[in-house]
Length: 357
Image (cartoon, rainbow, N blue to C red; front, side):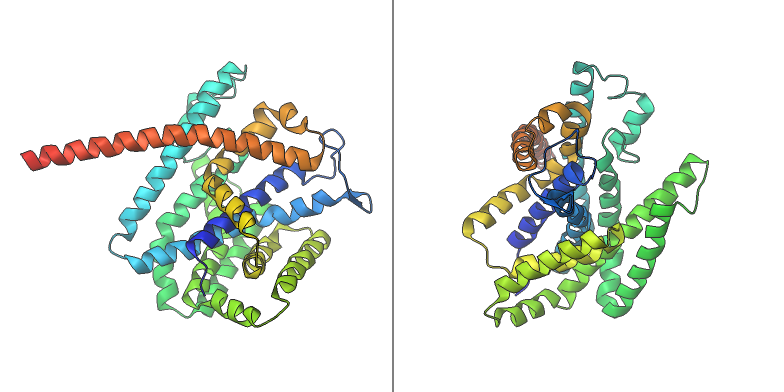
């Protein structure tokens, strides 16, 4: 049994929840932010849960690699065209949020000097070349490069030995991780600096992306599921695995392991039998995952920090922020659907015009 489309969407929903935990609570200097409920040796329990959330990008990349290889196998001829459409739709989503949260809200809330700030910052952000304004938008550019390079990646995965592909990918991951964290190569020239940064970001993201694709090629999840399905205690095993990883990551506090914790989490989480309402809730959040990723920092870091942390307790802050995100996401989706409908109508009229002539 391979991961279904719904499981992939649900897993992306989990990745977004991890992202929120990471940015909200992954700090030991919590005194001026929130009131923790439980502690472990003086450290808030939510800190360790948030620390584990650093696998959010790895989980998202794994799901993308897995899903894109499915698309590639299904229709190779239209794969590149479909990816351009996918990127185009993402850009529309991105531009709507950019206009609402930067161009409109920035001046309204008295932050026009920074939001939108200079014309250069706006153009680099609008094009997605070098996004400013929101620290989480670095992944926008990286994701586009992953999608555009996925044809080459998928061909290599299908053609070559999977272990060899993983080893090469892991080697590039190590080099990219060192560059990203240590900054070994430093250039004063903006263009060279940008290229090195983008290669490093792509390099740390391609590893979980490729693992996801290899999982599909080799039916690895199916093999894990078939083994676990025979166990009476598979749910307990899945929960135990996740708890052990949270504890282990609390001891080894490094981003380097995020890929491995992310991949193991995906397997452990998906073999667990979950109540229908949990799957429905996560599926619902998965529908809003892109908007939450692109919006979240505007709320608790840029415009509405006091409003978000005003809920005081970590659990309440988390739930309150989710409600704010979902409300905002509905607004973004409303505008998005209007634009897509307009584009579809224009295309339909153009087709009719061409046919009539």
